[in-house]
Length: 101
Image (cartoon, rainbow, N blue to C red; front, side, top):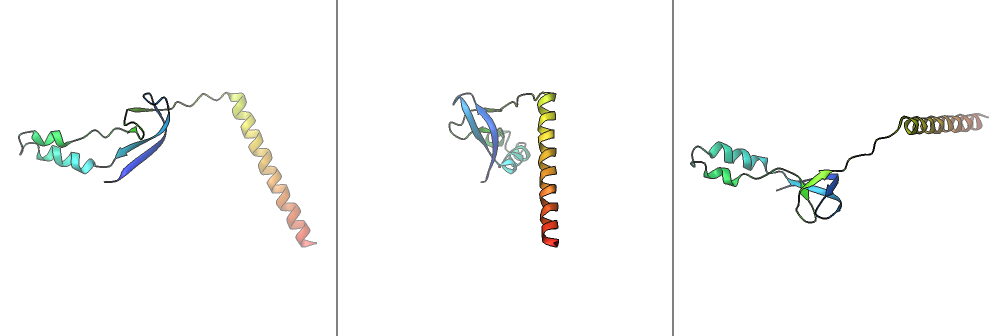
């Protein structure tokens, strides 16, 4: 049985960020529901919860909320990215010109 891993989760029990895990046995759950009428509902007890759980303690987890980014910070990051791209383009042009001559 394989396991899915999801990062950026918070465990309230451990009080720390963790990688959450979830088993991939959905087929077993579908089988339990399909077989329910034939087993007088007893197969439903074989179904399991598909929620993510803490990899350390097994407790429930929740997504870590990302802090809101201000417009000024976003513009500053975009300007830094544009300057970096411009610097890379200039460096490429200089290298091409040095190679040609």
